[in-house]
Length: 173
Image 1 (cartoon, rainbow, N blue to C red):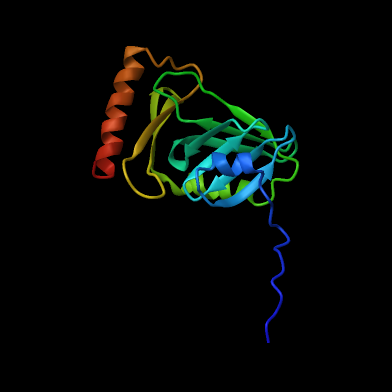
Image 2: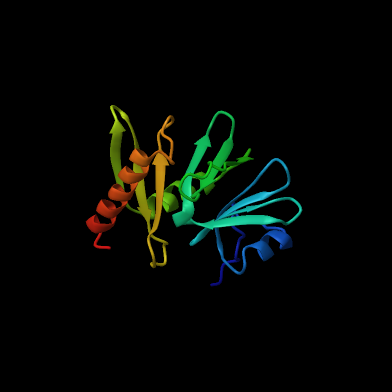
């Protein structure tokens, strides 16, 4: 006996422009934002696609931070920046995030190879974080400096250089 194929309850038909922005990657979780855009998580990347079809995407290893605010229903994404560059934050309001928030949390966390904290002054310091792409490859390194630390201060720069060398050595690089 053959049973009819029922469509999945949670299946979402993505607009063609969104599918094109994915470059052939298969969506694992999706959420529409309140501005007509989409946030899509695939095995390898996080994609933010605007209503006009323009898109930004990052490998999970270069998503420095992704924060979900349940009250406001906002997903804030910060990609890794060059050392000392200002943080760039993208915020999308997702009224129905479905499984996307869980996928983002799992994928970003899974890329972390090493995270080490270094104090510079009293309780003020930074973290050095190494992440590897889900498919393997080179580790991407990032620093998270506490408020009040100047990345151009020679003491801070020296400390970050030493901490990076220690973190690299701890994972055999």
